Image 1 (cartoon, rainbow, N blue to C red):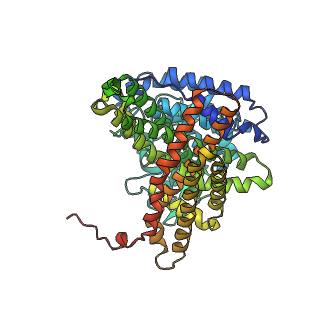
Image 2 (spheres, rainbow, N blue to C red):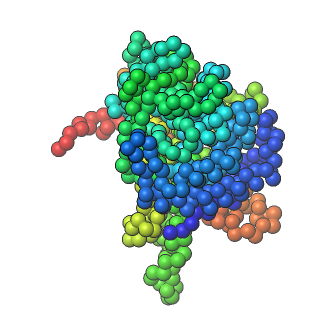
Image 3 (cartoon, rainbow, N blue to C red):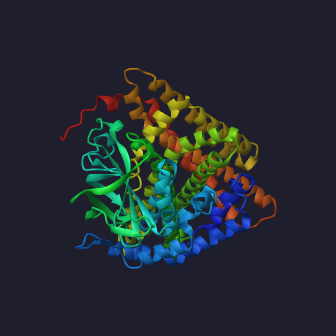
Length: 592
């Protein structure tokens, strides 16, 4: 098993050379000097590599245990590793200073999160959910709730959860049945929530649950759902913790992966009812929760990239060590065999591309929040289009990358002791939670395209075409430029097919469902290839400036692979879309 090494150099390349984050010059980020950002990345790398990373395998083996008192014991070392994270001030690095955070740009916070998820995905889920809770409460909570709960959440001494799913209400949240009964200045909640990540644990003083529920007189459907804050321990007027609230962990799930992350069934109101407080407006719970969901979806994409990076490191380490067969007449490590190199380069090129696109999206979020009046709307529209791509495409690719990592190991990859299998098991949940990847595809091909007639995506395609033109003007990059230009044309053509189909009053909904997943895959391939084209231009400029660093040569190799060998595979999705939906519409589902 190979230790995790945080990819600081790769992250710096994206931040400094692709995004040129120092030139963003956004108000509120004046303190984010190059020296400070470099120090943040280096210190985060130490936490990831030295504290969190070594617990990844042991946490997987040991798992979580529900105690007789309803509490949950984490794997050995997890609570201490989380406290090291809190004491280092990491929980608030991306939170605004007005809320008690450090106010660093989202691109920096996302870079730190990638390192932590690569080190230990199961542990990284805890602060990821807290970040979403902070976002939802900051946007929709009353001043009183913010005053009581935000400081501790930002600090990290209290953690947050998201309580949506019920046994009968998975993706269709209109079926939520948890009840919230008004009582004086609060509510009493009764019901059950399932699949609650870090819903119970022993790493923090308190757990703050954000819960979807409906009042007894609320209408059926989405409009009857409200959002409530339910603390594990009630909070006294002086801020101290009071008695245990009426919410318990009824059970924890036994899962394929992320064994170190407690996935809980929570029971609200087995006694007099769990005391909760309304967040935002009655009947707008789903709208408010989606503030939290949007934050979480981008971070799930980042999470997938972190696991992909660790899978790369495992595969490269093993391939450079494992002697098998001959190359050029002599015994050689498997890294000398071109089929193994194909897998390694594919893993590396895709991971680099996914990272660049996710951080580009983070930079758009920074501009949307802090930019000038004319910039914000454009940046937000781009981020809205990119978030479902980052979430779905990154996590789908992470599963494929982790699977390829197992393949590089050969038979040893199927053996748990190497660690390659754990990465595949852990990665497999990411395409499912925070809205399945099919839902992300529907969001992109349906809501996001129809909202502006494809204008935001068209703006991105124009930038892809501009990069393709730059590449074509350089002799040795011309083939990459041609491939990228062809990909942009495919995405534009597919977008028009989807938009036209969506306007059909009879079959529009069916068409979106049929085309959404191949459309998102096409968009992911093209936009990631675009980032690798930009990386090739930056690497060439560095070499022209006198750099002989092998790092840049590796970037050129990854870019060439991404544009000329990976992108053509993704371009086939245009043919899938143009083939129509008859086979899906006519298919009769049966057991035999």
